[in-house]
Image 1 (cartoon, rainbow, N blue to C red):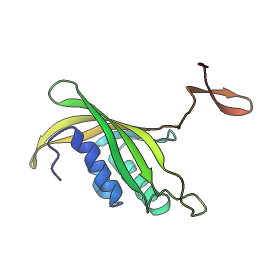
Image 2 (image 1 turned 135 degrees about the vertical axis):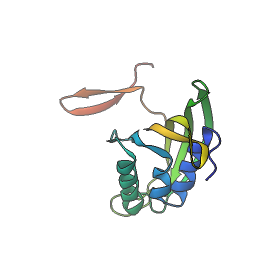
Image 3 (image 1 turned 90 degrees about the vertical axis):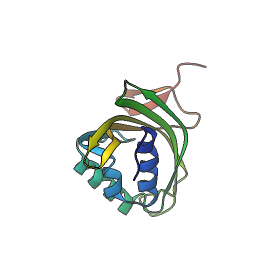
Image 4 (image 1 turned 135 degrees about the horizontal axis):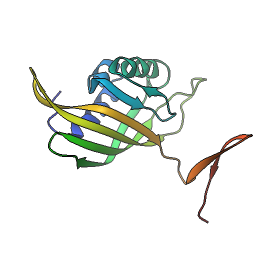
Length: 154
């Protein structure tokens, strides 16, 4: 895979997702990368990222498709960047095997340019995926009864 720009991490993630290939997805990351998923699970290396996505493709996302929308890149010098992308996932399975509604997220990657025997390319050092709730709350508050979505603006 040609990874000549920071954006290639997001497009590579989309390609790996759409072929349900946890190995290809994990190869987008450095060995000690961190990944925080939409529920706050935090993986601390490429092997954990691969294992988690293999499970997801086997049990949750095996029929899903990822579409990338708006993407922005902010360079942090010559060899580092932050990549943000709006993502839609269709075809997620519910625990009882039904198809869930589309899921929209904002994906954030911190990427670095590396040079090795394969040439110069970009890899992710960190990623976080955040669910976008349509018409959703501004934040959440915790109470003895559990977490609640709240709005501070009327």
